[in-house]
Length: 257
Image (cartoon, helix red, strand yellow):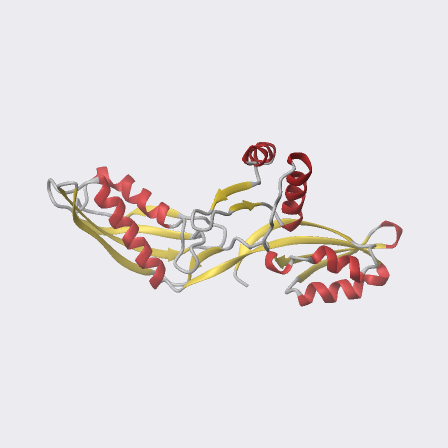
């Protein structure tokens, strides 16, 4: 069965798959509800798979509201050897869409330069799982502001772990919040259905950006909506337009809703 999934992944780089070790479920991630429906249909048709499909889930992002500092300390014995590392970080929010970045602001030799890359690695890996719901963290700057080192006890392990601990603590203190994936939706409908369609989009927290006249009496409505509000939209649109409406949808950006 997994050979079939691997075939689809090879054909479509936007399709992702992972195994949930706790539940044994195979989780497919794609560009939207219709995308996943097509993949499931192909799995059943081309490979004869018996597929039990759960309700789609939205993959959010996380960020932080406030600038915060935190300290991470690893001071333990591992495999008969003592490891020590202390890291102080400052996390601050960046403008939306900036992505994450790491900077070192050390002005002394409190931590040997050789450990800076492993501290960055520990921070960046920690940002892959936020403090709220374990979604990836975006648009955050992590600055290394201080720390300490003990001769013969410093190690890559100690500084990777202490950086991760400092980052996790800062994420908790920074007033974390969720970012919704927002989709740009274009709906094509006969003019007589425009009012009903706009009403439905607005009820789904949609922001109408434009309404344009197309050929043959069609109107094109452009809106931006949270992906979570788009589940089941195909059925809703068919019902509202007597089967005469169609729509396209693509990812726009992440933002707070």
